[in-house]
Length: 335
Image 1 (cartoon, rainbow, N blue to C red):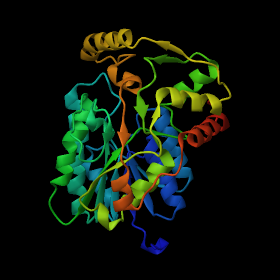
Image 2: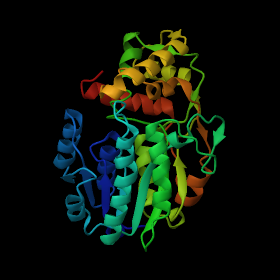
Image 3: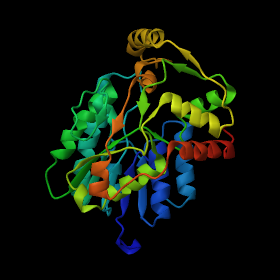
Image 4: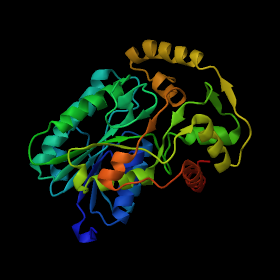
């Protein structure tokens, strides 16, 4: 068993994000010496940084293209968990995503190696599978279908091919939710108010992972011998439909009334037109096709490799996770 004295000193990028901030807090609670580096672009990210600093976590504010600042911050660390990424900026061209997700990762790998980091854990995404259906695993073909997925897929061989003594591991992260997830807040609010609308039939499938389960898996990847050089999917305990999700959220927010459904195709058409007209002008489309993936894509994953190589098994079912998430929203005045 690893003692606290033997725990690696962690360097977490993207710490102002939902996953990064929760991971940093859990890591410190478990005894990992932890430094967070992050860009701060809005009030929510600033609030997360303030919360981390109040918890005694060292926070360095720097984007991925600030090599001098990153070099200073990364010195003396044993393991990197790289979560920083361009993800939701639908108004930006693909070159923007490539610069951050591919070239930013390449630069960070070099800095980590120069700093003597032992292991680099790269946070990738199930978005690299695109519109694939059925039961997937780490060997399933990649077919990313948007700038985020394509550039995250392009970053994976950069990580795998990095030379030197530093060990690398790629973690493909499934849909993640939990306390402090502001992305799903609209869904919880909509279900609670009765104004939520399911686009499509709601039978597409998800294998979401609760953020604390994901964090445990990422921490395991910094140390597990079998993770060296491996690509591993981290997904949750259940394969559930959108309708199942909404029902569980309804129970968590005390509203179990029926949900209305709307045809999918008008929304897809509208999103396509908005992307084509607004994105070239640098305007973020209010609706884009990636946002509709929640209603369109179906994913199910085998967890065998995570269990074998990391000794990791998620423990939080969606009904429990939705209840804990709703409790956090209420406690913080969001619901």
